[in-house]
Each structure stands twice: as structure tokens, then as C-alpha cells.
Length: 495
Ligand code: NAP
Image 1 (cartoon, rainbow, N blue to C red):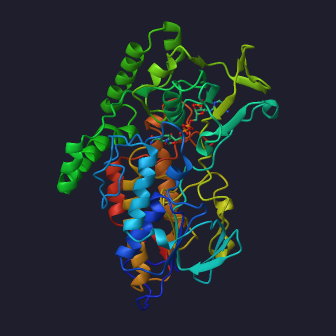
Image 2: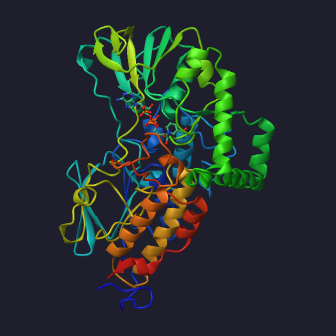
């Protein structure tokens, strides 16, 4: 039976509800903090690794930083006066999450080394199984499993014959010394650009294998002075003000503009990127190799103060011919050249359609997520899937990934989820998931709106699904905030 907000089934308020949080990255830690804040103590938080931090635990490559300003890339309730730079390095961000988890009493609750292999809904409860054989049962699942965490590797002929070392950017091999070595970096995405700038002065030779050129937006990354940090410590309001200004700037100047390929903001960004290329790269041949043939921000915009300088160092070489195969001493490219290498780093991105898989998720009536997502992942409001009651995702498919600080996104999503939870807590229903009709309507609207976004303006990127449709939230960030403020209960199948 489907009901709406006005005709809830009768039921008593519930205090026995148990929550299972999957993942102890930014969103899982947030969930645990917010549940405790709401007076919910009956929850478990499972993490497959031996440390919290998600993407910041997994990515330890040289040069790693977040290109969202750190005072914005922080929980709204836990501002951090100690950020060293406007864009703090990854290790500082990891330390921040560890510190927040400790301060809010969450770290001791995390169960490490617990990878969920199966999650099945039966008789109003979710039963989870872990690879180590343990099990748990709860009424709600919060899947905080992240987006960019299944490394994508290129399929290279002869890779086994290569006598050097290879590894993926998200599986950095800290045992391999790079100083004085001939190092290749495959890819020119956000990750590669940070690695290239950080490595070029350490290695003997750096070969950058570029498949597609990128637009690069110049950024400054000033350090915060001791005086500024003292002010932040003594007057948290200053930090909140800064956060709010940064948020407004990013929303108006970027996030809201991405959804209109013809917006003046995007034109200004494009012009700034063109000027950066023209003024930063001296050699006309190299400049043309680096010039994209698509609009800025069609692929995820690269922000860098020093990438162009890095590729112009005497020991750097930009190769735009594709690698046709690996040989014992290096990489052979389509022009016949052999690029001798000691190390080849795959900064080749992630399998972005995986989300929580390979975890098996089975909803009501034995509905398998694998089948529901056979044409690609989707979720109503990035949170709920029909027939998967009381199962909610944070940063799930179709959310504003790439537009904004994912911390703000997760905070908004969590408060939306808690409003859904409240329907069960109050006894209005026992289980709820988006109705099929509402999910289909959302998806149709989303696909239509995606056509005029910058991501659809003529480039290939991980924002596009197998049919070339951008998968990210195609409306403004303001609209996302509005949508998250109050769930439309008639869109839910409440039982
Ligand atoms: P990515 O954006 O998917 O870039 C992968 C790069 O590898 C691209 O240049 C791609 O070329 C190249 N590539 C992939 N497969 C290849 C193949 N078989 N042969 C040749 N080249 C290949 O991955 P990423 O750089 O790891 O970034 C992923 C996302 O992580 C970013 O978009 C961003 O959302 C996030 N990130 C954020 C930050 C931050 O500061 N906030 C930093 C790093 C990453 P093509 O362009 O031709 O496909």
C-alpha cells in the first residue's frame, strides 16, 4: 500500500531502531556524529580498511591537496582554525577527520577490517554479512561508501614485460624511491596534475602521457599566517564568515553556472584558462599540444598554480601520442618512440559507476541492486532507490559531485535522511523508499536537464554515463539545497 504524508499508517513511535553505517570516510563519520547528536546510540559503523578517512586515507600521492578551499571543505559544525593553506594538503585533511572523529566520540565506535559483502532486506530489517563471516541486523542502512575508490587501470599490451615498477595514484607505492628516476605519469586529470607538479623537481626525468589536454585554471594557495590562525582560534565567527563567503563565491561563480553551458561565469572561466595557457606556455608547439578542443569545465576543471611550469622544466616531456604497448625498458608510443622508464604511475582515474559494489545489495522481494543498476547507477535525489526501503546513500549517484564541497552535500543529504527516518521513528510508517513513479520522474527530469549542462558540451569525462548523459545533479546548487530542506513525502512509498 502506498500512502502519502497525510494518511500515514497507524503505529507507535519507535525507540528500538538500529542503524548500520557502511564506511568511515567523511560521510560515515558525519552520519555517526549526527546520529549521536540526535540521541541515537544504537548504531554500528563498519569500515573495510584499518583506518578512517576514505579518499584521504587511500590517496597519499605527492602533491595531494583538495582544490576546494579548506575552510569550506570542513564540517560546518567543526571549523578548523589550524588549516595551513587555503588549499590544505591531503595529510592535513586526513588528520582533520581523525581529530573530528576523536573529538565527537566516533573513532572508538568504528569497527575496522569489516568489509560488507552482502546487505539484504528481509521482514523489515537489513541483514548484513561481512567478508570475515560476521553479521549484523539493523532497521536502516546508511551507505557512506564513497564515489572515487575503485581504481581504473589502463589495458596495456606487454605490461608484464615491463621491468620497472607500476602503481595507481590511489595505491601509491611509498617503497619505491623516485628521486633520480625516470618516471612516467599516465593521465592529466586532477590527480595527475598534482602529482606532476610535486614530482618534477625530484626525479631525473618526468614523462607525461597525455590522452586529452585539460584546461587549467590558475589558483593561488597562500599559507595562513600565525596571526590569521590566532584570530580564527579566538573568534570562530571569523572562520564561519570566511566559510560562508567561500561558499557563496563557489556557488555563484561555479556550481550554479555549470548547469548552463552558456552562462557568463563559465565564459569568464574559459577566458581565464585560455589566458593562463597563452601566458604560461612559451613554446608554441607545446602550447598547441596542451590546448583542449572543448570548453573549460566540460571535464572537471583543473586548478593549478604550477602545472604549466612543471611541464616546461628541462627534465619534463609531454607525450601526446598514445602508448601502444609496454616493453621491458619502457613505453612504446604510436609514433614508434620508446620512452625509457623506471616507474610508470597510473593516474588514470576511477571506475565511477561502482559506488558500493561489489557489495551485494538485495532489496524488498529479492530485488538485486545489480539488476536495478544494470543500465547504470541512479538514485532519486542521490539518496533512495525504489524497493530498497530504509536504505539511504550519501553521495550516491546523481548528486552534485564535482560541483561543490562534498562535505556540504553530505550534510544536506544527512539532514534530509533524518527527516525520512523520523517518519519511522514517529510511527508514521515502518519502512520507506522512493516510489517507482517518483524515481522515474526524477530520472527523466534529470536526463532532460543534463542536456544543457557544460558536461554535455562536447568532451569525454567521468561525468558521462555509457549513453553520454551527465550523471551529476544537473540543476543549480541552490536547487539542491531547496530539495534537501524537506523531503517530498508523497514521492515515497511508505508502508
Ligand atoms: P580522471 O579525472 O578520471 O583522469 C584520469 C586521467 O587518466 C585522464 O587524463 C584520462 O584521459 C587518463 N586516462 C584514463 N585511462 C586512460 C587510458 N587507458 N589511456 C590513456 N589515458 C588514460 O581521474 P583523477 O585525475 O584521478 O580524478 C578523478 C576525480 O577525483 C576528479 O575529477 C576529482 O573529482 C577528484 N579529485 C579531486 C581532487 C581535488 O583536489 N579536489 C584531486 C584529485 C582528484 P582522458 O581525459 O582522455 O580520459
